[in-house]
Length: 111
Length: 114
Image (cartoon, rainbow over all chains, first blue to last red; front, side, top):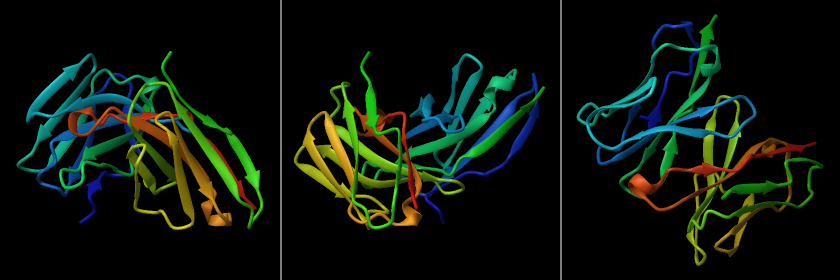
């Protein structure tokens, strides 16, 4: 099992709809989870982080964490064309305190 | 503004050449990292340093070496460049571990090895 898994996409979502991005991880003891957005040729930038089970909302973004299922997701409400990017899930591994990135999901918002 | 900078931003070199990529930060973070990114393979960790005296190999360190000259500077060297080292390289910093392990990235260096 890969340490951090994401569907590579592309995920196509109509403008104004909700985009749902998913991520699973293998280290059951992991406690800290991050979502980054990366535009083509640019560096990743942090969108959200989450540490506790449940939902965390920030503007149009909601991160969801379920540690029992080893699952973290990112919801983007009212999707805009500017949300078209690759979204990277990152997990702080409990065993060695390093960040492991998933390969990312490419998101296309259709005007 | 506190920042992570990388030099050069673009580099074209030939097989067998030694090159150095440099990273500087003004964030005051102890932890620094070097990643490479290839299409379809995501971000992969090359080396990381939790403080000036601590250097550790990441998942793909073969063919690379690093130097942590100061808290603010972390350099990546390719001793003898080969074409499959063509990639986008990112330096990153973080304040600490766990919930403090948000990675702050530099703008990247696009390296082409001919």
